[in-house]
Image (spheres, helix red, strand yellow):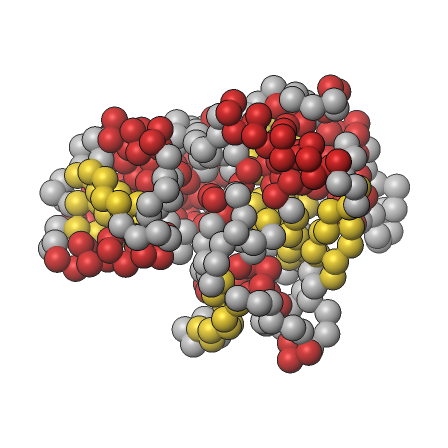
Amino acid sequence: MPPSQQNLYPDKLWAETPLIRSPHLSSHLQAEVYLKLETLQPTQSFKYRGITHYAQHALRTHGPDVHLVIASSGNAGIAAASAAKILKLRCTVFLPHGVSQPTTDYMRKEGAEIVIEGNYYLQARQAAQKAVDADPKAVMVPGYDDPLLWEGHASLIHEVKQQLPTGTKPDAIFCSFGGGGLAGGIIVGCRTVGWDDVPLVTVETHGSNCFYQSLSLNDGPFAGDVASRPIANGTTPEHNAQHGVTVAHLAELTSKATSLGASSPSAAVVKMALERKGDIRSVCITDEMAMQAALDFAGSSFVALLDHKMLVELACSATIAPAYKRDVFRRLVSSDGPETNKVPTVVLVLCGGFKVSLDDMEEWRRIVAADVATGGEWDVAYNGETFTTSKAE
């Protein structure tokens, strides 16, 4: 562990994950592309960082009788269950209907109590809050909206700074965006290590893009006046007085990238994103483009020289999808400025996730093949503008 992390996180439970240079994507993009492999956390997701950090704080604050309660659709609940087992704490996970059997089995194996409530995450969270209100020993473990979580997630940026070649500052950091926990951690981490000016590229899927819609409701990276921007169907704006921003509430989540399924983002993360020195480059892609990237990354496609032999869920493959499309990547990582011949260095944070299987990959292969056969192109939304990219690999 780097010395700086030893001081900041003396009792950490998470793993220091590798940062590897991708020879395939680096050659493909004529860039230095590094992958931060959060897929190798004990629970296969970056969420293990912040949630174990929060659980340890709860133990120090409330003692060994503290009862951890969390609402989740999967990865956060697994992280909380695993943390509770290591720390010998009671844990209850509230899940909406539809969570897969392997996911619930994993949580039970770790000793968590499971309660199924509601059809959406928000309904499960409301039930979890009632349970916390009724139990004086219970604390609600947040899924993505809390400074302690961001402090834990920020550890990955401390690692990246130590792992990159000496003196290297990335020209952009890519991550997926669900409710904002990962982005919040990256923003906090970048601020701490002196990278607040590094552009952050956040990737969502159409049908699960609460952050993109929220940015459109505020002054920031999108062009034009806020009042002139259309509000997407099914989106309700809500002003958050505490943080002075407007956030979007999505009435329905239609993306198959269920780990990105937050109906609204953290207002605090929206504010941090709007106020940071570095650009926020908000991108939305189709589910099919994320599926194609997952297939490419695993080696289940015809792009044999670009694969990495790893399975990742759609919330994770969304992050790497722009790297498989040169035209998309070049829009997001420009070479403007005095060093026009400079080879850009980028870090793609592979957030990980438990919810992927060979059966999923086969289903995605069928979906992508059928979509490609219809012809046309995929729509990509970028900071208020839309362009298209080829479906061909």
